[in-house]
Image (cartoon, rainbow, N blue to C red; front, side):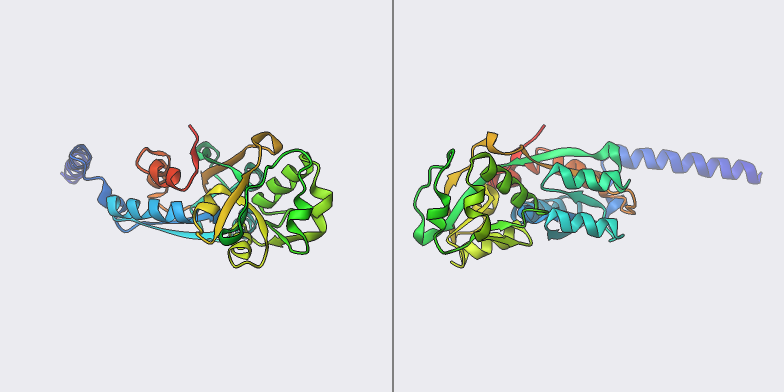
Length: 263
């Protein structure tokens, strides 16, 4: 009799589960679950808005730590508790993947971006960015704000572009390397640097700067933002959250800030 009662309970549980899923009540399974995201600093405005929509739709909370992709990758390597990683370049995602710290089958190229030259909004004049353009004269005795060129993706892209255009050697000594692309943006917005190299999405987020030129796409590697779920995640909602980021529901928040949706 006991075996029979257990069998009945098992069957009932399966039936109830199927019914709940069938009428769209699966969301409460995640109701108390949180997702911790490590995301590139340049994503802040867009991702904050997307997360607001996610919370409204599901009742779940996504907590985000924003910083340079390099810093986040190192924190993940050191065991920082996170569920997803969104990098501003492929290299730092490759780095954590090489440490077996992501679920490889969840890795997706999510977004694209453009590299731009910005100046304080009240002093902005158009600049033609081309081979051999005279950036050194433009910067003068000031500083060129960039992400740290040896680690921050925007800085690495910026250096590569300036090298390709043949002007890196003329401004190298004047570069103010910042800990993140947003930190470089602030230097220009506050007037502490006459020019800066950032993503177009960063420029869109700060009214204190104006885009004065856009770097040719062939002057640097494509700017790609990959995302992946981390291997040590304990979040039941991580997969659903990733699917949301990839969905048409989230796309408008990214496009509003100037990101390109990658399919």
